[in-house]
Image 1 (cartoon, rainbow, N blue to C red):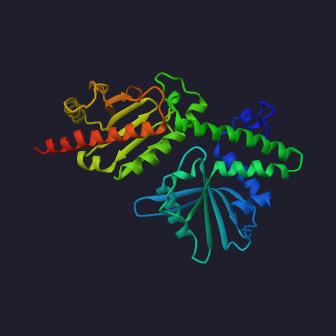
Image 2 (cartoon, rainbow, N blue to C red; image 1 turned 180 degrees about the vertical axis):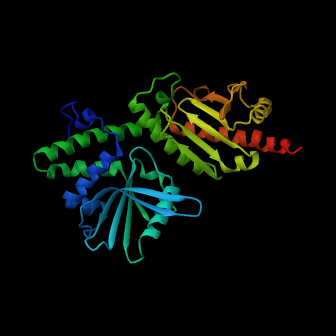
Image 3 (cartoon, rainbow, N blue to C red; image 1 turned 90 degrees about the vertical axis):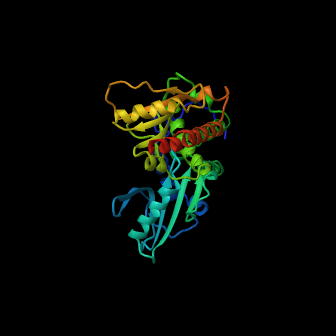
Length: 343
């Protein structure tokens, strides 16, 4: 289908990267297009209208697991339920889907048929141990729409889906381009616009998944926390806190890559900075200057990723840099500092 106009409904209303909007489109097609149901959910028993943003919880010893399913469909007798988790702005970690399974196991009896689908930007990222989830990506969705659009009757619905196809194709093409060259997003001093932040957030969640595949240790990831205006990824190795007694982590924020400490203990911060000054492995690493100002967290040393990469780099280059950064901190600093502190 040729793009005959630059005008696009979704650009105008500013909802193009909102997950709820995409869920609403998927929900509408499930409700009105039998062929869409046939291709994607392969079942005709889900006769109740789709529901959006359905929440479930499960209480465990020290925490409460929560999930909010983007789309839920039920059979008339509610003996068959289909869940769709729609991830347009991020990639869920496997642990998130495992937790969802725990919640469903608690919520529903064994005689109820549960079917689970994940929509995301790139299904090739998932070799899930948790293989009870069927995974589609938005390119699958786009191919269906481009094929089926000729079957829509002329009118408002067809115009809406045509506009959706056009803008979705732009997003998918941009995602593919960023895989081969994403350097412009990480340029030092770049003023980030709304689209930049969208892509940085999505790439942060992808980086977390791929980093975890390369380093087989226990990590917690804090991906794009809500109180930061600039996309942020915290990589928190469990064993670092066990050895140091404080939260030590790697913080990645656009062009800045930092070894970070969460602690209000100024003496411990000073000791760690002094120790690191003797174990830095690259001249582009900048040490923290400890001041008298009270802080709850600070970087110990930091660097610009563009000081370590070529002018045109791809996402794999960033991931390899983060892996190298982690390994050097782990081997040269964390292990040795722990041994020194025992003397």
